[in-house]
Image (tube, rainbow, N blue to C red; front, side, top):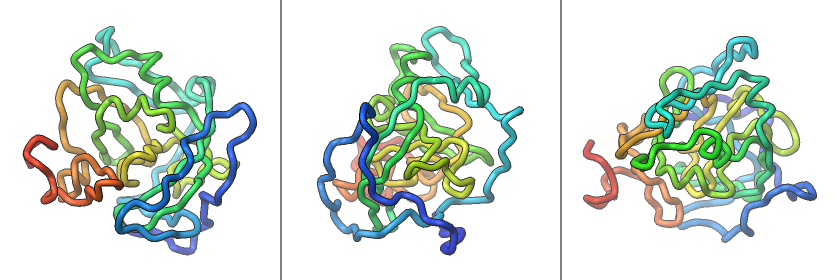
Length: 223
């Protein structure tokens, strides 16, 4: 990942969840090798895509239980149940931002509305321009995994992933895909963009799973 614009407005100031909203577990402190940072810098690969609400969609593809693809337009997606979570964000480049307040659609809601086939083990989350990240399907069921549209009480900015970014607090930040356009259900694991380029397949910050050379034989598909 690269820093695109260090002068951009920073998101992710600490804050408490609103009454009646869902919140993540209390912060556990810093994972190994991390240092605290105030606010989220703008980091991503490639250009910022343009957003047109008339043509934008989010698709669920692959091994769905029904065998059919699901598609939401922007207004349909905005109508899905929403939640707010407060969670820590850990980047593989070794900074952490604590108690980031995100709002959006729980990723578990996608699994509820579009159940995966029984054999599905993983998902590939796709963004504009072909960016992708793989995750175990159970990571989408975690209570603080969110398809976020807002941060810190405001809409996401385009540089931070508007209209929709995935937030997966249990993994390093490259798994929190910006500009999400599709979720593909997989029968078996497959590496995503950075996982093919030397990053660890699992990306657990508490186990400091940063790079592919650290992987055990049973932790990942072959490079």
